[in-house]
Length: 279
Image 1 (cartoon, rainbow, N blue to C red):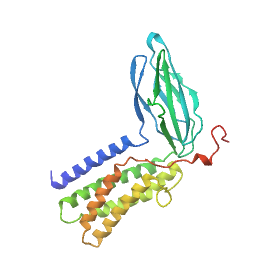
Image 2: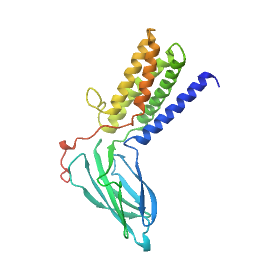
Image 3: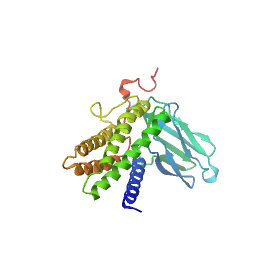
Image 4: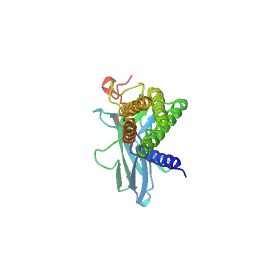
């Protein structure tokens, strides 16, 4: 394999690893825990993201307890962040599971919830820590013709950006073409397709600086500024262009591993009717 091929291989490995880390640590990744009930241990996945077209279904395994006791339980939920009292919804049996539905909410609406499950003398709380809740955020449906290009272009931007940084690290000159390609992809994926995707999901094109503190938008802006400066430097062949490319690549990697959707769009429930008083 040529040196260029090895650099692409390393860039791809770093990109995939960073994407996997971001996905598994993000606030929309399902909350995974273990339920020990009726002498049986089961893996439970509690959703933390759902589309606005329906209420989110919350389901947990419900094995028969010792002596054949049937499992039962309750889903407790309230809008987040509010001081609304928790609403208790009984879990219904569906085959080998217990399930209940959270109510649908508007885009960027969030619900905090937990479950209490019983089987004979056994009882469990999910999430297990007292006072802890899972937080689920609703998003609008995103057409695939928007979502797929956005994800594809951003992934390519990260891949090529890391490859550009590796090239700048090993060569005395900055990779001019790759730098310009990275900046162009970030412009298309982050500043064009990104706001369209966010509009479909949460009702606003941009909620980062200067209009707000949405972390995903601000991450995108930081990456774009870094690569825009680097691209301008390589275009005019400025002294220090290589260092600027290295900085842009390092900034991209650091920013990218910050979990996606952390501190994202959030509905202000103080401007809506209280729970139970909705029109």
